[in-house]
Length: 114
Image 1 (cartoon, rainbow, N blue to C red):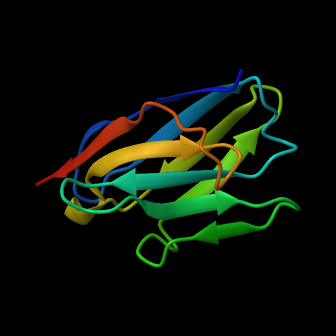
Image 2 (cartoon, helix red, strand yellow):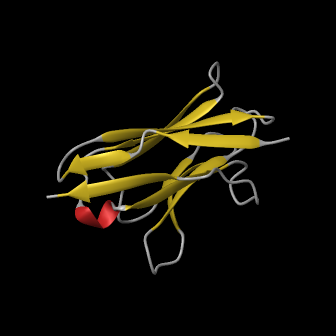
């Protein structure tokens, strides 16, 4: 049984940083692809970052250069380091392992305020 548990969200000021974690069980993050999505109220869920099979990474245009996806094989956890946060980054962030599957975590709220 696949379980994904996100954490690390919160309220941060413009320009601040947060690191989100996605602890996985029932699936190995070093074997399967993984991704982070976000959804703001009234919008569709959008891709933020993905770790593809083979190790290649992929980022949404709005976060390139600011966000970094990584993973810890020992902890079986996927991370999303978010720097230079903007108000438009405010959303609920979800991890998705394997990337493109129907397995999702419960989400973690990120709010960027002035």
